[in-house]
Image 1 (spheres, rainbow, N blue to C red):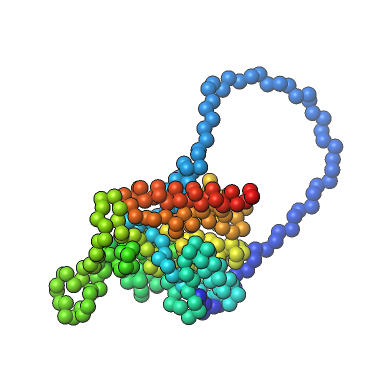
Image 2: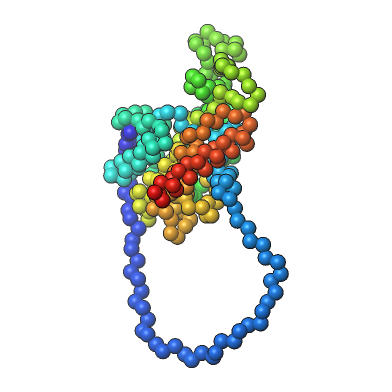
Length: 324
């Protein structure tokens, strides 16, 4: 775990004094109620959704894989760096994101590790996003197919006015070796100068261990996440709430435009007048289900269903533990 430069303080939301109750008064006399005439509502159909249906709807709503790719997750290591926050809130965010990562099977980085999750607070987040994407363009768009959400999405990232905005880079990798399975401009095997214009030197080589039309050994892994916090908008929220929100959008590919109002989720932090105080069982089940899934199906829809099935099992285990 690592903490970078720190300067902005997260403050707690001010408490509002309740208004004094009005004096008790005798209520005005009311006429005796009259039973209304019955109204024919016709046929009324009451429907409900099964847990499977709700889980699949949630996955479809919040999950945002890169175009024509499966849902990505971190491979085995995550290292969190925080900049432009005071030491206490910065360390709290680093520790919390690392703890959640460890809970789902990842290995948090030791102090001094090179961050692959970079969290930056700023009172001018739009300018920061613009400068970063201009000066570090390759870090946001590495050029390989299926490694990010595209140019239009990057422009939305820069133009966003959300309290928290994020950008992730992922890559298809060989699940057996961890090697990136797509060509990245400028990368080659061996000596690039000696390779010259030989296209074979720039193409990845994947040794297939079990050929199948239904399964694949190529899976998608997250490589980098950049999170920008708007210091002007986050000051009214607790550090614990903010840290859990950052953990959720850091450890999974979450759609910034997802409508999660119908679910108990930390993703409602900035929209719900009474948001959760931290990750809910629903959130934990989603993350654990994502990291427990095999992700070996070639069909992307089937792969998403596999994750939904795993979430269902995790959710059932969590709720069963609560009732024991």
